[in-house]
Length: 478
Image (cartoon, rainbow, N blue to C red; front, side):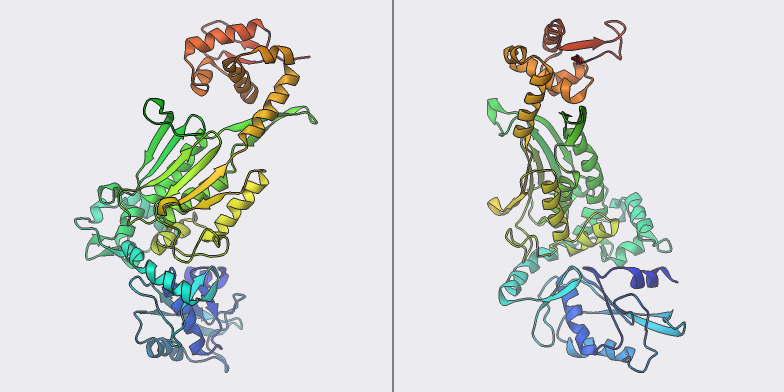
């Protein structure tokens, strides 16, 4: 079976894909075509049942292929939808030679598409939904922002393309018989030799050469507030400015190095256990959503991932897209950037928007953390994820008081307590580890380590003072 046909049969219906029997009324397919055009585009396969059975057109109850092709031309003649039709030879469920019809629709950018009955439909996940007056108005407002994806970038060319990235996309999509330039043209990423904004964002070697706003900046602060001037408290900064797929992979690996894993002593089992500071899915999905759905037409603004001791903030330029609001974010879906969303979905990163958001909520709940909070300060989207570092510190201190004599622990100063906490959470620590993580100089750390060794709280492991493998740990209490 051809790979394309296999996809038509085995894929689940989703944002981009719908199946219909050839027995349906041709008029009934129009709302799906309109819905695809108003959303992210998509394909309607006719001749395949909802369960994936190929029933084709060779049966007495099936309508003719031409009826389905003509209905869009006749009934949607005043709309800019220009469906593409492909007919595939197949074997139906009885093993007979047959055909199926695939109607593909591009997303519309400059206007809202209405059906023959003057109703407006929008694709939402695997359903076609009819919009009310307010939703239609919001859809109309959003048209100008959507057009940004398809605008061409002057002076750009194939020389700007990261060919390795496009090759990765080709393999992922099993398009090995197509050359790289043809793949980009087929996706409307190249027009008359020029790259579109979407193409630059997804596949350019240096997107910021043309779109300086195409960046994600990571900032980590010491404490729970951002200091300024002489009180500035930034301890880590890093900017990611490659094509979106590369930002996704690089930022994920980098942020993993910045997050803490809390260790605690389970008194019941008498052993150490680890708990990540945040569930990975929650912060990673927040980043992917920002990269996918931000308003890239806003120049001078970029995505910010800001990390405080007690929370993560992900700032995304532009308001939530179209009919999505902070109140309905769990039930509504809309892509401001459908071409970007489609490619990232094909790479496997993008979930259906509110499917991902729902899981952010559920993952935070599993970790016994507060619900994520979405807001729109200053016409930007802000996602806040809070950890429970205060509760963990209380639990940590309680455990330390059980390991160390409570009276001794009470008399320790803040630096000594930080050294003990870090040693408790990491089992084996070096002078360099401590200096970096408690933000104190090496000489200061050595001075306090000496005192803690003398008190019998820590113990040293090594063969000599110059042993490169030497480390410290909490002394076992028997």
